[in-house]
Structures are given as C-alpha cells and as structure tokens.
Amino acid sequence: MKQGFGQHLGMRQEMRINPRLYQAMDLLYMPLLELQQHLKTELEVNPFLELIEPEEDEAEADEELAAEEPVLAADTTEAPPSSDAIGDAPDTGEQTDWDEYLNAGDEDGGVREEREEREWLEPVSVAGKGLGDHLAEQIALLELSDRERNLAEEFIGDIGDDGYLVVPVADIIAGVNRRIREALEAAGLGLEAEDAPYYTEAEGERMLAVVQGLDPAGVGARDLRECLLLQLTDQGRGDTLAAQLVRDGFDDLVARRWSELARRTGRTPTELQSAADELAKLDPKPGLRFSAGREDYIIPDLIVEKIGSEYRVSLNDAGTPRLRISRTYQDLARDKKKFDAESREFVATKLNAAQWMVQAIEQRRQTMLKVMTYIVDRQRDFFEKGVQGLKPLTLREVADVIGMHESTVSRVTNEKFAQTPRGVLPLKFFFSSGLSTSDGEDVSARAIKDSLQKLVAGEDPKKPYTDQEIVLKLKADGVDIARRTVAKYRDQLGILPARMRKRV
Image 1: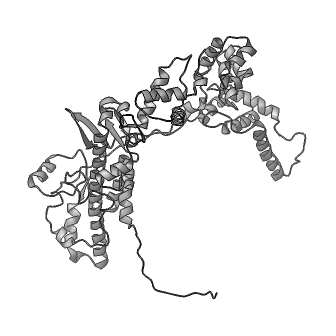
Image 2: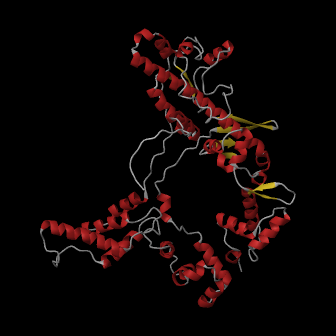
Image 3: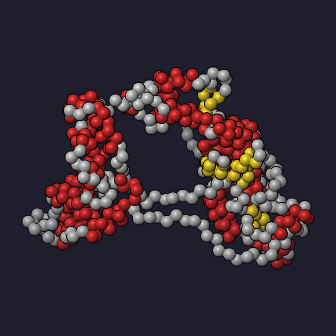
C-alpha cells in the first residue's frame, strides 16, 4: 500500500463552545464571594461596566421604576430571554447595533451621581499557629545543646498534622548523618574520624522521648497504641486497667473480644468495657487541634422564608451584585469622530462585553431562583417535618421540570448555600437517591439514614440490632430495603456492627 501526503476538501458538522459560553458556565459555578471578586476584576478591565452597591441611595431606583424604563441590572425582576442560562448566552458572532443602543437615551438605568468613595472590607481567615510552631516554641524553652536542638527540629519536621511521627527514627538519624557526611566531604575532612559528629539511634530515641513529652499529650507517637499510652501516662494513669489493655491486649481490645480479655486479665467484661469507655475519651489525633487549616466563611446565596403558610425564595440581596452600563463612558462612545478605526473596535468590543456581562448575571440570578423554587416545592415536607420528610431528588429531575440541562443544574447547586428555617444548608443537601415504600411513595436515602441512627440510638446495648433486624424494623415502617444497603449506610454513618456494639 502506497503511503504519502495529500490534501482533500470535506464538510462536516461539529459543536464548538465559544469563550462567552465558557464564561457563562463559570458564572453559574461561582459561589457568591467568588462572583463578587470576579466582578471587581471585570470592573477594572471594562470601563463600560458600573457596579451599583446594595447600600446606594434607593431614590435612584425609585426614579427608574417611576419612569418604567428597562434597567440593565442583575437584580431586575424581568425574566431573561430564555430559561436556560447556558444555551441563551449571547452569540458573539452576531453584531449588536450599537448606534441604536448608544442613542437609546436613559435606557441604561438613569443618570448616576458621582460614585461615593468607600472602602469595602471582607472577612479574611488568618492562618493560625500550626503544630510545628507550637512544638518549636516549647523546644526553645528547654535547656538543650545545639546538637540536641538540631535533632529536635528534625523530629518536629517529620511530625504530621495529626501529631504522629511519619518517619521511622532510624531513617531520621540516617538522613541527618548523610548531611553531616556531605558537609565533611565538602570540607575535605575524614569521614570516619572518631570525632565525626554522627548521631546514633540511641540519641534519636532519647530525643523522641523529649518530643513526646511536649504538649499536646500523645504527640510524636508512632501508632495509635503509643499515642494512647502517652496520654494515659500524662494523666497519671499509666498503671490503670485501661493502660494494661492498650499495652498488653490492644488487638483484642480493638476487636472487642471481651471474653478473651477477661480470661487474660482476670477482670469481668463489665470492668473491661468501662475501661474501654475511658479510652474512647482520649484524642486519637492530638495534633489536629493545632491544625492551621483554613476557615471558610459561608454567605448564603439564597434565602428561604416562611410567610404565612407559604415558603418564599429570594436571593441574598445584601451580596447580590447589580450591574449596568456606565452612562459616562456611553456618552464618550457616542462621539465616534474622536476615535480611529482601532479605537472604535475596542469600544465596540468592550461595550458588547459589558452588555453580555449584565445579561449573564441576570441569567444566573433567574436560573438560581428557578432551581431553588422547585427544590422548596419538592422538599416542602422537609421544611415542615425535618429530615424524615426529605424526598429523593436528582439533578435530572430538576432539569427536566424547569427545562434546563442537567449540567446547568449541577453548576447552579455547586458550592451554593441557602438560609432556610432549618438552618444554612448546601443545595447539594436536598439531592439524594431514594427507595420505594410499601404504599408506593419514595423516601430519601438521607431520611433512611436518619431512621437507622435513631434505631441504633434507642436499641438495648445488651442486644443491639443486627443488620437483618434493622431491615425488618424498616420494613415494618414501610421501607423496602436490602440488608447490604443497611450495612452500607451503617458504614457511612460510622456505626459499628452489632457484635462490636454489644454491651455485657
């Protein structure tokens, strides 16, 4: 078969998403704080965009309503051209008649007085002192030689956020000695000299004991067993039954083999379980209390209020941005004689982008309201009764009902929160799979988990419910569920099997 290069003509159809559609999808995806930051950036690069602050004098808005003029603002109550924010994003290939738009008079929303200069402050989480800093401060207060202090810093650097030593002592010593050898080589000194400052594993073990004596108790442990023993010793309980169980029968303790432990220790199962209850009060990850993790502020994007017997959905007006086209720059753009061809193209591009941004924000607003309105209508029983009233709901169901694509609904609900009479909840909370009941209704998986938790909480500790017994209990309430599903939900809730929950 002869191979070679050639050219040919052909026609084919393909779908391409222009940059504006990507931007529209990103706007739907953004939570409120991120959207505000995005708009601030847009305001800096596009002179035709103007932000109306929520606290701006309401007199201007009253004038706009009285004049009954269309306002290009993100909080207008007019419906967007279509229901799907993604599908109806403006087509950049279609040129807008800017002559007509620029001569539209006051259709931009009225004359705006000079913007008040003010400084806006947002809550910013500040990273606190981490575990490493906390340990280093304590080491600085100890009377250690430079040699000991250097080794202590090595150990602190190999302690994870949970407080456990993540590198074996032998490897830490080997790493330090390797750097010492490299320094000796660079200095041209003997590598095996008797006075070479190499560390020994014995020094490493002694320094680990020093680090394990620091606060919090249990830090520097190599495993859970050592962590618990360190905490018991710190509390002066190193000779108690609890310490004996951890030291000599840890595997049987974890497996709840009370009979075997009773035979080995000569104690009753009741005494052993009481000791295990004391161990459960210890901290298995003592370092996490000093974690320098970031704290995120949650500002709800939507508000659900009960007014009378009905639930009302609204956007969080305190943080919802309002945009319009700047009247000042619009007046400047009318005089086309001031601009050359390149400048006119720049003006048209920026004006087109500004109008698209205003429309895209409004589309985002309307889309969020539609999605949340349906969620509230579907989950009304939840707002009235609590988790037990939660119904199964999927993204596809919402998309089909309100006439949008499933991916659009997914972006709307991503990282969005709603302030409701039941608390501030993520929109994803309202979505879950479901099972059928004996009367033909559907029940949410979240409601089933709540029922499972209540069953376990109210069971007899001496005769805990097995998974099969939980299946029968739920069937008695009309929920048809398989035993393996109960086991899966139980694992997700962190509930132990019946054998390990049993008390004697």
